[in-house]
Every structure is written in C-alpha cells, then in structure tokens.
Amino acid sequence: MAFHVLGLARTLPFHSIGGLQSIGWDLFSEFVRSGVRVTLLTTEIPGRRGPFEEQGVQVVPIRGAAPERYSRQWWKGSAAYVRDEMRDPVDGVLSVSAAAAGLLDLRPGILRAPFLFQAHGTSWGEVVSKWRSGRITQWAKSSRNLLWMFKDAQLYRQFDHLVLVGDIIEEQFHSFPLNLMAGSIPRTVIRNGIDTRIFAANEERRREQRAALSWPQQAEVAVFIGRLHPQKGGIRAIEVFADYARVAPQARLLIVGGGEEEEALRAKAAGSGLAARIHFTGPVSRDRVPSLLAACDAMIFPTLRQEGLPMNVLEALACGVYPICSSTLRKAFDDRLPIRFASADDVPALSAHLAEALRIGNAGRSLLTPEYTLEYAAAAYLDLLRAGPRR
Image (cartoon, rainbow, N blue to C red):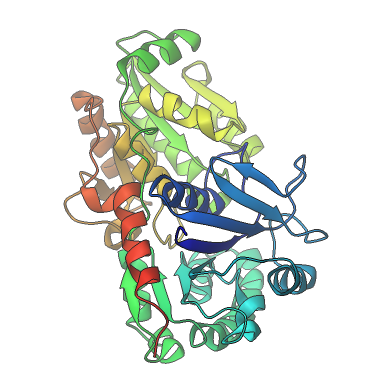
C-alpha cells in the first residue's frame, strides 16, 4: 500500500492568489505526483462540498469549521474525523502551522506516526514586525500574537520535528525566546518550493498579456504582487516606480491582487500623474498569476513587514523576473538568488535598482536555485516523514 500522509491546513484558496494555504496545497499535490497517498483535512471551503478529490488529493472539509481560521469546531472536528471516520492507517502527519494541534491527544494510540510542524512564520516574528511598523493599530494587534506565542511554546514540543520554511525562520529559532520555546525538538530548514512547471518564463504569455493590457511589447514592465495590505509596501512601490518612470516613458507598473489598501493605492497612483501607466488587476485567480508575471521584467516589493519567506518573490524569480526588495528581507533568501536590496525608506536607491533590472529585462528562464523548487522540497519532507517518529 502507498505511503499515506495526513495533511492539515486552513481553507485552501483554489481561486485566489497564493499564500500559506497554496504553499501547502502545492506540496500535497507534489506528494501525489511522487506516488504518495494524501488525505487532507481542512476548514470549510466556500462553494465546495466534500469530501472530494482534487489533483489526486483526498480533500475533507471539516463540517462546521469556519473557513480560513482555526476554531474550537476545527480542533474538535478534525480529531473526531480521525478517531471515528478514518479507516486506513496513517504513515505521517504534516501540519501546516498549528493545524494538527487537535490530533495530538490521539498519540500514541490511533496515530502512531511522525508529526511534522511546518513553521512558515512565528508569533514572535509577528510581534516584532508589528512593533517596527510604528502604527498604533498594529501595536494593539500584537497582543494577540503574544498570546499565541505562549500557546506555540506548548505545541512545538509535542511534535517530532519542526520544519522551518526559510532562513530567517531558522535564525529566529536560534535566538531568544524561540530557542528556549522549542527546546531540543529537531529542526530542519526546507525552503518553500515553487512549481517551475507552472511558474516559468514564457514568451507567448508575455506577448499575450502585454497585448491584453494595450502596452507596447518593448515596454519596461515592473510588478507589485500580493495582498494589498499597508505593511506590504504598496505605497512605496508606487513612489519607486514614479521616481523612475518620469525619465522612462516606456515604463509601466502592474499591481496584482486585492486587499484593504487597494483604494489608497489607486489614489496614490492618480496623484502621481502616472495613472495611465499603472494598471490594477484587482483580485485574480492563482492560475492567472504565472501569465501576469511572465509579462514583467522586474518586481518591486519594499515590504515593511518581517517576512518569513515571501512566495511572490520566488514565483517572480521562477518566471525570469528580477526582484527589488527591502533590505529587511536580505536574510530571508539564499545569497545566490539575484535579488537587489535597499532600505524601504530609500526611494532613490530602490529606483536605481529598478532601473538596472529593467535595463536587463526578463531573463527568459528560471532564476531559482534547485533548493527553491517544489520537487526538491517535497522529497525533503518525505524523507523526514519516512524517518519515523522521534524516539
């Protein structure tokens, strides 16, 4: 019988831009392509009834568990499903963040399998990021992260292995207070992987998207992509583009995604005097993202947050797009990746990097190293799961 992985994650956004949930989904789908059987427990999915099969993954939405968040019904429902309805043995459990916390009491009886905790970020990292923002509202929200920090400390030690999805997460776990919270639990860095069969440079897509936007094929196109949130740096991205575009009439900016800051970004674009050269897509389906990225030459991502490992940057690199990022992300990526960094407050420096990247243009090939591919990541996870539980 095929090796059986039980995965747990919040609602999977089959129709939206990626993020935490899509990272998990890509990984589970790759497991299936590797010959592994996957049962995925998730919260309710609006518009989808379950259980159902998607790309070979057996998806089980837990009835009554509110979408996109963990709740009492999620913890109770996921445990009840495993205890009362699962009939086949499980060889390994992969928890996206704390998703599998409700199953811990089923060890070592029903679930005699290794439990992996995928740490895509930390509550402590969120606290630091919110306090650095300088916004009173973010300071207030940090109290919730502090509460979760103490809950995380209890959870970490009940798992067999912590998988850290990026180098900056590893650094956090080597430092106070996370080094004390995690104790002696084994930790391994497995960087989030990109499916380079989907995210890839593509000249045909490039021509089609530029034609659809009524932009010249020879235009210099920059992109800002992701959730439009004040801490993601969208306002600064428009300022950087405006600084460069005033002396570059062929320059264009594509802003991909939706969110609470969209109205403010549109107002900023209108006030820049360059609104005709800035296009907002609004929320888009995830399957459209590779085509949009393929149409671009450079990415501007001057985030104000302490990010774990931003997938939008990796997806851009896979599509041959050169990223310009805030210097707070320098430790998040391998030095071999061709990313340019500058302080998020230094518009001239970011603009100079943008000019350099646009002069080069799209690389026409993936700029990722093998460690950032989905195939590599899936194999590394399976190695840990097959190693068995901690003794």
